[in-house]
Image (cartoon, rainbow, N blue to C red; front, side):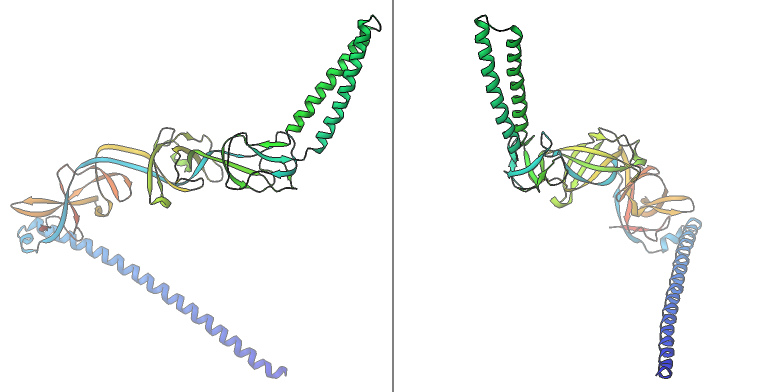
Length: 386
């Protein structure tokens, strides 16, 4: 039996090694082809740069060459000034300013009745829970009996004292016994009132997890009731620490709600945290917003904090900015001798946001910026404006 198994084991091992080898060869072949593709792409880019450079040099040496070339169709846009803004894009969430876990005034106790359910609107001072008060009531009954007895003794002692019998010490002692019982009764009645748990402010009972028969401690410890007041809302977001010098209370903010068809509201940073979280390396900001029927706590909000703004700036689409050995440049349409030609303009760029980049130097108001068809254009090439 063992002799028959040996060939089968050897065959299985051979098949496994063959499959593993095939996979390795396939991976190696894919990696080699990817490397070849990247090499060809690099060569193509280098050739394009050399072609553009030679075409520009030829036109410069022989202007008639531009006339012989076929004009290329382009689209242009006149350079205008605008207010360029840069934003810090963050993800935040809506929070209610007033959120609290209901807590008893005393040590808590066994729940005898629950008067609210999840989703109910509760008003400030509304009774929410009734805790067990049997012991407190029994103690109150005992003290009331003691108080009645003390009052009776005091009255008897006073009657005797009025007749000139007895001592003043006995009268004062009887009076003190009455006052002591009254204080004890007042204290027990206060303890009895602690068995009633009331709402500290108006809002929605967002979470009700306590049940009759369970022990209620409150304050978020174990089963309880959470009340959320949505009349005042705020948006909370965490900002990376490298923006600590740029974000401060009063910074302008745009808040976008993706779940509400990108509804956008404007606001200002109301609070900026002073501490950096050592785990996330960020600090928090809060923006107060007006309450609305379609806004809910924990709703996702895209927070755009403005950290740079320049009025009268020139901006251009980032996709038309190109690079050569001299730096960044764009192409503009220039009318020369009654014909339109493409001209290269070296530019100095500033901030980038979205699909636009600030142009600090290199362009003037009124320049005709080539926005489409700029690919493969060279300086001096004839163009046709669409």
